[in-house]
Image (cartoon, rainbow, N blue to C red):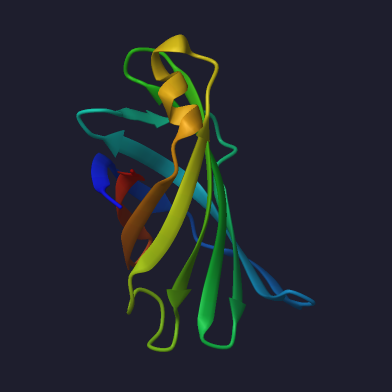
Length: 137
């Protein structure tokens, strides 16, 4: 496999909504205040307010479930969704966050995104999250 750089993603999170412990584990919902993708192949900012992470914590694992909408700097609208995992043994931000983004768009300039699997590694610092995303080949 080859990792081809896709973009860096910088995210600012809102304080979490604490749903409490339910059948899937402890649920926290992190709405996103802002997000920006920067890269040679993909750049843009968050579009709308419907971007959030429905995080579940179970024992030593944080499981991410994220949906986001971006608009590229040349006007394409791209939906991204990804799941991921992180080790929460040492507390928030103590371990990398690993994710597997998928994309959807109807914009002809970016239909190549509809066919790829991406992977990423993120670092959480307070409510700031920074990712490196790559296309898997």
